[in-house]
Length: 340
Image (cartoon, rainbow, N blue to C red):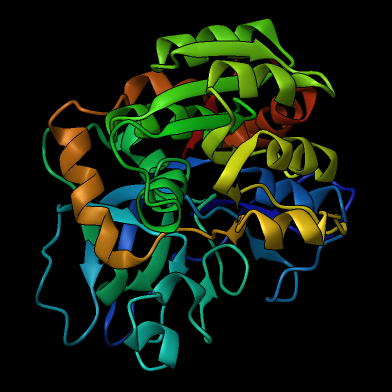
């Protein structure tokens, strides 16, 4: 099969022919329909973040596809079934898994990091983690449900506990941020979207934002006026410590800051304000498996946009061009997918 392999930081992925993997007991072989491009992969390719599997490794963790073959003991699927593959596989045995927090499993295995991923024509994964996709959901665009939509869904539904009438501000209108906008709106919130790019704010309006604002260092003052004292929930979807501080300043007394963007840097908040105003700063990672069926049903019913999320498609041979587009900050990009 054809695959894009990662050999190390600061070099392009190499398109190579490698053997098609065989599913072992409890596994399935999936013919990849599409795999979404994620900034997580750029941390490996550009920023020196090591993969758990020693290179060469096949990256790619946002996947949809069709069951090709079954390992021994697998009877919940058959060849030809449409499926979604989550980015993280769980052990089912640790304390986190036993208490419904599988997304932070002590023994998690990440596709395209701990094991070979799906920038390839086929991928082998544990059958227990694979999620059926209804016929109504298109396979190619469906790939982005795995991460780009599920991550903000968990962040807003479970970590933020957004309720109808809440005032929610989203900082950053990239792939995660725009999906956070439409999910917050679907949950009944009044939504403010913040970005530095006009095109991203236009997208946010189309995804349901009630108010869009161009960002600056004092934008929290405008947000406080619009929300009559501050947001119930602010979501930082960029991974920028300065933006995290601005987002925190936009939250009302008793409100929540959700850190959805990744940064390896430290960030400072005023401890007195956190204590005296009972503020909450909450991390969020991925999505627990039990949440996916509810999310997929909302998409099947048309309550959340899907096709509009995927703005660019690339064949596998052009994956390095796709990453160049991701690096460029292209305003028209929401999510790109690679189609083997």
